[in-house]
Length: 246
Image (cartoon, rainbow, N blue to C red; front, side, top):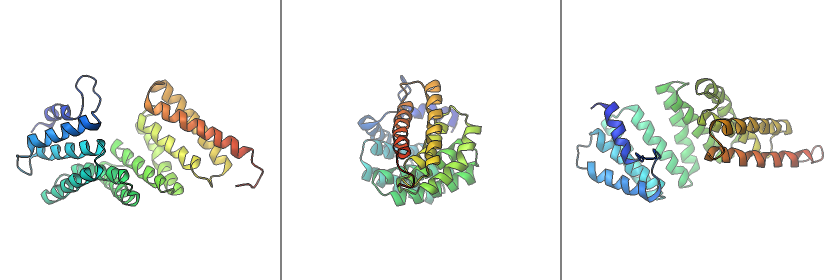
């Protein structure tokens, strides 16, 4: 099978050919079921059947049917392992499972999965691949969700310079990673005042780049703007406290 010809056609199951935006909600869920019904009769090792299972799991996930999505994803992972699928496919499925764990409020399991995914990406794709950087971002976010700020800061500090060098300052992932790094100080009640000032300075720069590159209407620009306003307010409150106050 020629994947270069196959994948653009396959994307019609999850991406609108007119606006080029991914489907979501009940539309994505309906297309996921339609895709699965189309290919379920093929042999278990057939590539299209495997992709259809992925579409079904994602459709259920983004329509809010998280328990059902996890059932499909775990069955998909078991099948891939039994068939000896390529590590790339297995990593994609494990990433989807980690996202579902987060939606199901199972943060410890999500963290364990994200840590393993990052290790797998570094081994398969190397330190500077965009998929490895995205895995590092997800792992750091998972640490943040458990208030493990120092650990999240350690991961971010290693990968943010790589993202800036490899992807560029204006890439969405670079901006997200820098925002998260600032957040490791902003959300940490025990962060030093100078660290909080550094976080605000970082967010100011990220906000400026996002507005220039992505535009004011982009969702990420709006998120950065809100986080920047909140961090400035927190910094102002900290600076008015007496010395030595918590």
